[in-house]
Every structure is written in C-alpha cells, then in structure tokens.
Amino acid sequence: MSRAPQNLLVPFRRDKKRDFASGTGAELLASKARQVLLTEGATPHSTGELPWRTSFGAGLSRLRHQRNDAVLAELARVYIRDALARWLPGVQLVKVRVEQAGPLFTLHVRVKERDATTSVSVSLEM
Image (cartoon, rainbow, N blue to C red; front, side):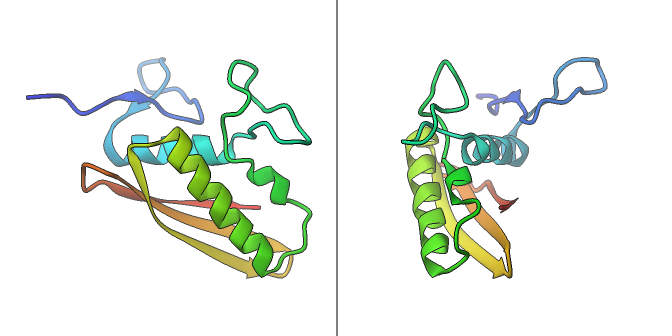
C-alpha cells in the first residue's frame, strides 16, 4: 500500500514540532496551486521571481492596475489555465470564477487531482 504524497506547505510556516509545516491531500493541493498562481513568472516586462526557474508562475501580477472589464477576466482565465497545465500537469482545472466589483478583482479557482477525488478552491484578490 502506498503512502499519500507529503510535502512542505506554502507559504512556509512552523508546525508544533519547530519544523516547517508539511501536508497531504487537499491541504497540499491548495498549497501547490497557490504557489503556481501567486508566483511571478518571466514576462516581457520582468525577469521572474525565482532566479533558479525564472519562467515558473502564472504572471497574474501583469493584470494589476488594468481596466477591470471582461477582457481582464478572460486574460486571468487564460493565464491560470496555462500556468496550471504547465506547472501542475497532475492537476485538472475545474472552474475559474471571476468577481469584479469596482476596482476589486477576485479570482475563485477550483482544481482537482486528475487521478483522485481531492478537489480544492483557492481565492485570490487582485
């Protein structure tokens, strides 16, 4: 019988044993999705956030300070879809819901593992 994958949770935090917290299942899946979506990847205007893998990330920060319209919502969906397909191939994008209220832009992303029933929702405010 195989053990469920276990890894460090992002953002890093301490557990009760004075070590970095690790998790499995839904908690780990949400952590992986958040890390991909909130990391700034290389764009024509930036070099990327991680020096050892500059292209890693979704580049959602490019959407900040832009006109909050239907085009922006569709760009967010495309960036999310492409980043998850590239960096988390074992994860399936279930749904992206965009809430636009005045200047606030909130993304609700639902993902699930391809070979399991584990699914999670991640919300991001831009």
